[in-house]
Length: 206
Image (tube, rainbow, N blue to C red; front, side, top):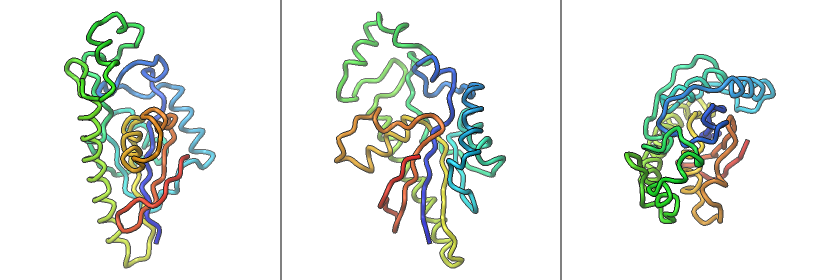
């Protein structure tokens, strides 16, 4: 049987279009994002759902994305896989923030130890995503075991966020020389992770 986890970044939002810092702000998809997801679905971008298990982060943009791609599906929300919390910098652009001393200190931090005011640091974010992804893998493994006697393929689909997906891939491939932003897929795109015995053995970008 084939065992796969599919990570999909939600569609385009006004926050993406305006290049804003936003993670925990619960904004919907932009009209452009809705139309692009419909077009990607029509050309067969996403894996066939079959008897897949579905997850979102419970945020509007991930809920909308799941429904556009796969229709109304029973699913669970994994809060730990939400995007980074930018705190007081949420819904503000670099241009609006660049004169603030606390912003300049934050963007100069190369170790990921500093957090925006009332937000979370990169290191804390990575730790949260690592824990959330372990939960997703455990749920997927349970699904693999439940389907094994029927010889059915196991697919778990998680609609989440660009930063979330990048953090996961950085953990999967720690030796690859890619920075955080290099792993982030375009809106509506993502990665398929091929699993064997609970471990990731291959990755396909779509």
